[in-house]
Amino acid sequence: MGPLAGLRVLEMAGIGPGPFCAMLLADMGADVVRIDRADGPPGSPSDVTGRGRRSIALDLKRPASIAAVLRLVEGADALIEGFRPGVMERLGLGPEVCRAKNPRLVYGRMTGWGQSGPLAPSAGHDINYIAISGALDAIGPTEAPVPPLNLVGDYGGGGMLLAMGLMAALLHAQRSGQGQVVDAAMSDGAALLMAPIYGMRAAGRWDAPRGGNLLDGGAPFYGTYRCACGGFLAVGPIEPQFFALFIQRLGLDEADFTARNDRAHWPALRVRLATAIATRGRDEWAKIFAGSDACVAPVLSMAEAPFHPHNVARNSFFERDGVTQPAPAPRFSATPAEAPAPAPLRGEHSHSILREAGFSAAEIAELTEG
Image 1 (cartoon, rainbow, N blue to C red):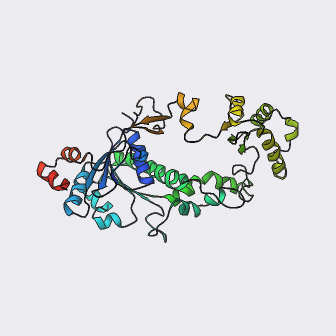
Image 2: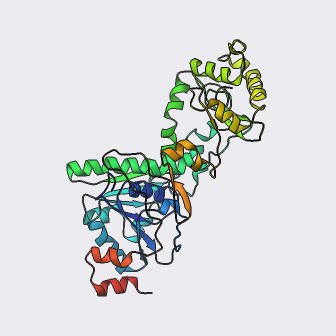
Image 3: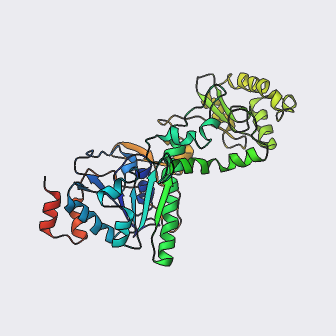
């Protein structure tokens, strides 16, 4: 099931954006085979980004295991790896070797800094990659930038970028018969996600320090407010007609907010709104604004989000083996995705994967011994 049914992907086990990319492909129906280290983590159903694929465990220090991976490459459409530049080459599994075995192969490489550039060989994490893109400096209050979890570099600018790149290269391979290498860098992806903000800056609409612009918490009509219960309300009525409805349901006089687009008045207007919102609890406000165009929503915890009526109606979350997790997205009318299976245990499918690839019983025994 799913629009990618029939697509065969090899995933070199890793952490972060590589597994997230593989999860996206598996969610859409691709047959993703994760090549785990024989001495790697055992695997767990709580590994949400590990869901939906099969696992083969190999000792990549052994020439026979490298040869086995290359045989699997022959029948694959794509390969995903997330090591530092040069690691796969030293293993004997670099793109030139793999594509010599399978010229149609799309070889996806996921790194922080990319395959080239002065920082390419250096270690880093999401916070570092988004720092040089301009993204981190734009997020947070005036006092200091705030890391937006690791969503911008690892997952949005990393895993999703690689998934999009793989799909583009696979379409090209389908048409031309030739695969290629996809060099996905989180630093590039974070910069790409900032494209509209760079556009606003060029147009003179993002020219205040951090915390003083339209979408960074500066505008009183785009931010979060504490409620009487201690919870928070997310407020975003940017357009005038939505703002008018927002003010109406707050019980305030719209005439008091005629200067809402004047930045000089933003601090005072924020105080007015904060005072009003602090008079009721979060859930009470949620009922008042429910179904309206006021662009207001309660800020829910991860424990609460799966039970919001909208999420329930759309089946946005599901539970398997006691693990509550986001459902596959987006939705497809003709090829809907199924709820994916839990993450496999290390090597859980080694024998069946090798049998499918034509390995003999003796070869399977040699590769899986111990």
